[in-house]
Image (cartoon, rainbow, N blue to C red; front, side, top):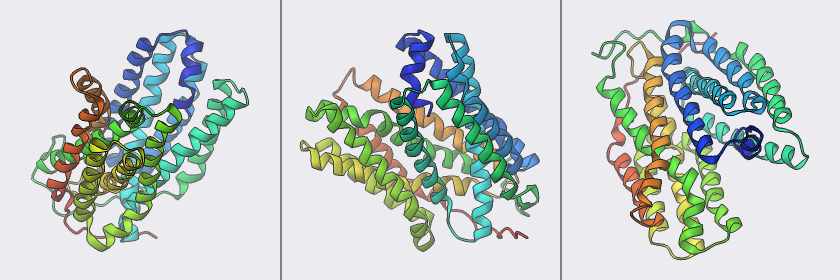
Length: 365
């Protein structure tokens, strides 16, 4: 909802594109701060409480950009919005790990599939409110009310602090530090989310520049990527259950690499779209396996581990589009797509990082 209203909010606050770019950095800084704070708090007070608090904050903060009338107000609103978003990212993934443990089978990717559907629904609803002439404050205000209501309804059904495991064996790494396993998972999240960030920001422009397609046709690249990403997230759990998380990451990353190689060498629109589709399908199940592994390290600080891994992945998501932008000063955009190709190959090589020891299931009820 925020993204589709950016042009209107930019006009309302009378800021330039360059100023908006700087303000978006505040959103990113707020998100990283929220991620790092929420993990340890989830370990202490339980992820259910943190989901309730961060989700409510994010829902309320959604209206902030719509109320802003100048640059500093928008900057403050985006920082708070980012903080709530980052805190919710960590706390809801920590809660999802508990639910997955209670189910005794992989379900994490399906949660991420719902996240993808939420993005699609939000963009469609936002487009509809724009078509109806609603001001941003009305559309974002409605989103705030729905978000608060959803949190109020869902929170009592989440698992409490008592469901958080207290493992008997801990990693030989002091709390508050990045253990080798956390660093490994974080690095894997970094390269995979870097590749995903590149697709989000550059897929449409790649098709438009490389093939000379119109804007409407070029948009199909991101559409096919998003579609296969969503479909893949709803099927990845079955593969994880049957083959294990390492296989999902390794072969998924190889499929993504094959897709991106197709994009780089293709000069025909259907083949290029196939490449972006394979790229999305390959990446779809990888990150959920990383987050599940991060929540099952057995350190006694699952929330903190999750916050570190998610934070490193988010840095990759931010770094990818920027890296491609810098490279386009030196090479054509399609050639710069070798970066996500290499990232996918690296993820396949080090997929073993998601291998995790068996954990005792959580007993609920």
